[in-house]
Length: 254
Image 1 (spheres, rainbow, N blue to C red):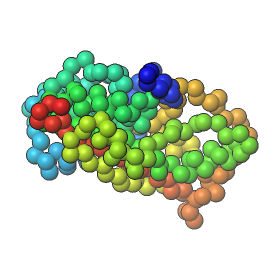
Image 2 (cartoon, rainbow, N blue to C red; image 1 turned 30 degrees about the vertical axis):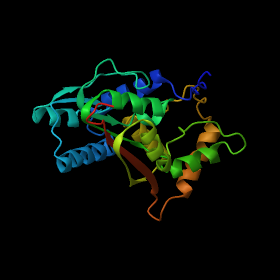
Image 3 (cartoon, one colour; image 1 turned 60 degrees about the vertical axis):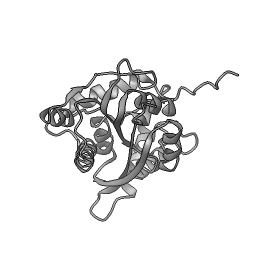
Image 4 (cartoon, rainbow, N blue to C red; image 1 turned 90 degrees about the vertical axis):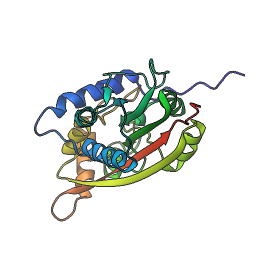
């Protein structure tokens, strides 16, 4: 029996472009980096707690270069390919640590990507991934629905529900799987600033069939809806749910 076809929701090319744009924007002094910085801080704390000091590591999606630099300072040989197909077997393996920032929110075959990450580890190796989860961006979602109340277009990614993550990790063969979530709340004076922050951090649209840009009238409705949620000081709170998945490859290499 043939396996069911995987829906092509996301574009690998657009996923790479948004990471490239985030790396370019990160060089600017006023670029938003709070999500990347939160993920990197969390990674370093977990590695210190686990006393995991890899000799060979693979880091994907670190637009700031901070984690790569820190691991190299600790003596690790770190690979950071500019582009890597997460939905295909990795060209090399034997990594004692793999860290992925923000890329797994836009893959079509998430179970397959998790299996490929496990297979690229050395026996006993550790994998850690962070990405934005399903409870994120309620204010932006509401603004998009207000912009096109009759026929809303797909403008925001379908995001992973953390409740489904444990089952995905078990199916992928991760050992000692752990799923953690936490939230960041950021307050914005305008919808436009929120959108700019998303683009700065590689969270722009990676849909395979993106909708056409909003027209002037629809954009005005979106801005008004976003502003209507503001507190007394004129700023609207937006929520980012960060999902962290950690696990290992067994010592037997299975």
